[in-house]
Image 1 (cartoon, rainbow, N blue to C red):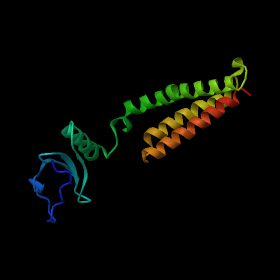
Image 2: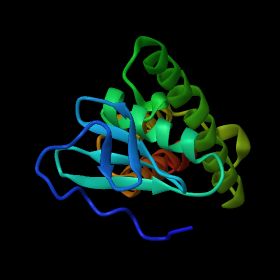
Image 3: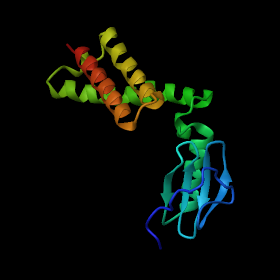
Image 4: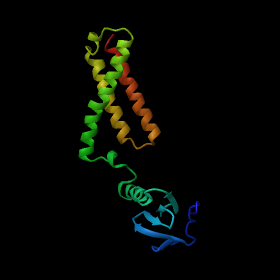
Length: 172
């Protein structure tokens, strides 16, 4: 089984039949081609005239097709990050409830761990509101920010820290 990627075509025009010797185009899109060979499946970018990725091993056709579909039809955005009404509603709920719960539990554990009275936690409205809204804002930024995953994780972590600090202020 060859380990090197097929070379790009030598001519300027791309034939629909084959991109390179032994590589056949299976699906044509506006920008991307889904291609196969005897040993792998890959995605060809017509604009940059290079291979996006080749898949070898288990379930290669499915993985290549999912990448092609995501790039061709959805601008490279995963299904759960698309701005449709259903997903936006779900992420608003997850931001307030899910991340709010995470921040509340972290803040509660840190506040009780520092010796504060558990009954006084969450009695001040402004810090608690800051904690919940930082959870909500952090989650929505993580989901919908058009940046690499590392940047989005740092934004979520920063919002979580702000929320936990606000929760700690509510016990003071």
